[in-house]
Image (cartoon, rainbow, N blue to C red):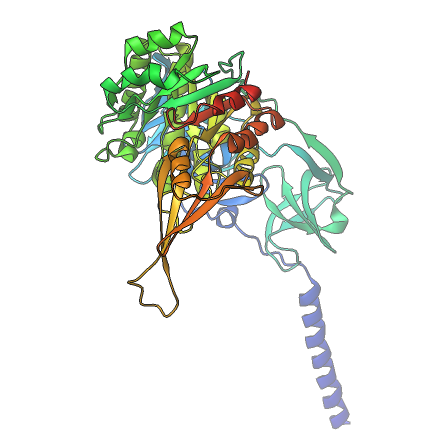
Length: 568
């Protein structure tokens, strides 16, 4: 009997242990997680950001009862048209026709030159960041938000469209951090509470509560989701442009001295159909935003007498001592540059400006370059001056030129449809093969309306020389590849001199020739009326605004008969 009693007791103890274990395993945890810990808030001035149904690592700030958003968050997720100049501690926002500016800690802001009182600091700055008051951002941006306390958090949304919503069916429903009964409880819901359904699992549903808690509830605690449509009441800006009632037939005229303006009549003598000329008159000449000036009133008057508009070119390439990045990233120097451009445009009665800023550092100057275009466009529009901007053929590297934003503010976006292979290229090839040019057009049209696109075309080619490299130490033969630019007439002279035969290359849309001089192989993808015609066909195919040609004096006279077939 004693042995049996012991055995029974042991069995009872084991059964009790198993029962306790099972009860513990299947009993929901009552552990609760503090929301401040859940949102990773470590100080009283931090505000959690729940953005489009996701808790962000970025937080906002609560200062004197107002919420301030991190500038980088505003720029990257809310409205990239906000621009912060960390060098001069000024916040800028550009509308279609006005420039809004607010200095750090200021309780007022300027709309162009008129002061507007806001009643609280608009932007707060530190040595490493800037914070923008949320309602100031909201004035110009498409989003909604709600602020909640205990702990401080913002539920912010700008993702419009359909969402799945459901109602809580049970009186006491816990929202847990993860999908499991042992996960800590974040908050409690009651019957009838509305949630956004983010993901449906087998036994759990991921939801967001109306006050911004994202977690999991049991599947049997929520109703079947229904679709709800979120619509914005924000009215986006409309942008207007100076649009010519003729197809653009523009040619660049390279002017390197004031005396070179006298060549105008000669370079125009054999042309046909030109209605816009762009002399290379202005370039960035110092780090204060000053420009060099080669302009001529007589030149402009002569063009106007011939029915030709003058869209003078402004470049950043001529003076190597100027730091373009410095000028564009400082508001005072950038705006001085804008004022200098507008001043000369008015002084010389220019019809337009053609902006040609190249070789920019995308990491340092991307946003500042676009802000420069915005600021310049407003003043051009106010003075009836056409603004066109030259752009590389689109590539991943040149995406920071932001052609889509350019198209909002400028009148014409010009594709520099040349230099597919350029001086310094590692292999010989065409300056502008037809397939490469077509890709440039198609990719630009993904960002810019066709009615604003002008296709730039070359009047020059490159003759490539491939020579065995006598200094190479490799066991395999290596070669040096060099090139020199030629105008159409000069290239033909070279081909004729060496009695090379031209053959049509349909893949490139060009005549091709090659010849040998000693051990050196010379190749040329020729620019002529035939290659130009292949590109001109793209104007009709894609309904482009026109074409432009680099540069006057490089062409043969027969090409103008081809041009006027496509540009009337």
